[in-house]
Length: 134
Image (cartoon, rainbow, N blue to C red; front, top):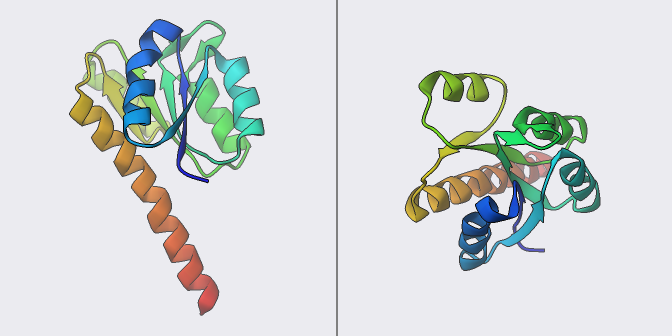
């Protein structure tokens, strides 16, 4: 299966990311809130990148990150913010998110974040297969 990403945010805000994912030949799945994200994470084990809105109707990005961690999924979380607050960015990264995207994000910065996150998985899988051969 090809690369799969989950975008957890309200429909209006996720359109741009879903389009960028599609343009990059990445399967983009959508969830409106933490509960839907939890279900998607359990039914789609091939998800490698999760874009989570900072604030969600039933929680926030940290609930999504915790679900990824507790589920032992091989996925990273990118938090999407509506502002570029350096203290908030530091806190998000310190708590285990892979990266942060602040709106308005450019197509180029979003694609770089997507491909960098996917690159981590390709590198870790190659390393694991090399280790298994030894």
